[in-house]
Length: 209
Image (cartoon, rainbow, N blue to C red; front, side):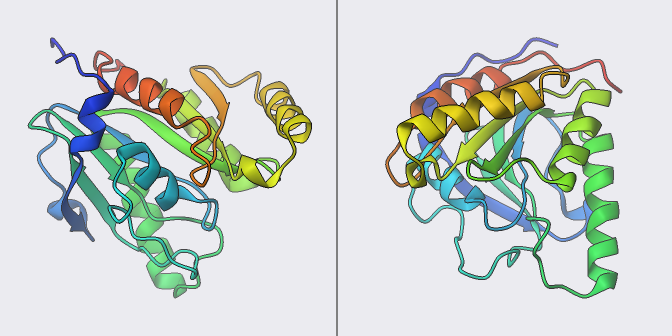
């Protein structure tokens, strides 16, 4: 299937499309979409807002894991961004945790329009066990991943570069993986992230299913 070329201007057209609590509420599985996933409190919503240039597009909260739905953002008729629930610190009932685990597994397994994953990771810490599980699943399914080492403004330049090198070394065995420094506060790496995301949106459908 032929894909529609796009550029970074497309990301600035992002608008809220809707939220889905169950798979039957997902939007039409056509065109291409890039999903954002990550541990709660790593700055995922702030990253989405910075990349799209809309400060209030993704809701940010001092309460980690507050968003418990899959949020779809429309870029145009063929392209979308998807905000997946944060994991790790979410204080939700165990029954809801199980529900979301099954829902996300189904999303990754069945979503034909999914072209890649953006995974924010706190630059001051190494990827967690849950991050590694996500990366290994994507690798097993040939899904490209772009890692944002967020909150890099909290580190000195030398410490940030050391964190980047350490993360690249630690994840060197993961295929289809790119890693960069990122700061929503200072705008570090925002344009680089935009470039990678539109590249993912323009990818040909993966033959992983």
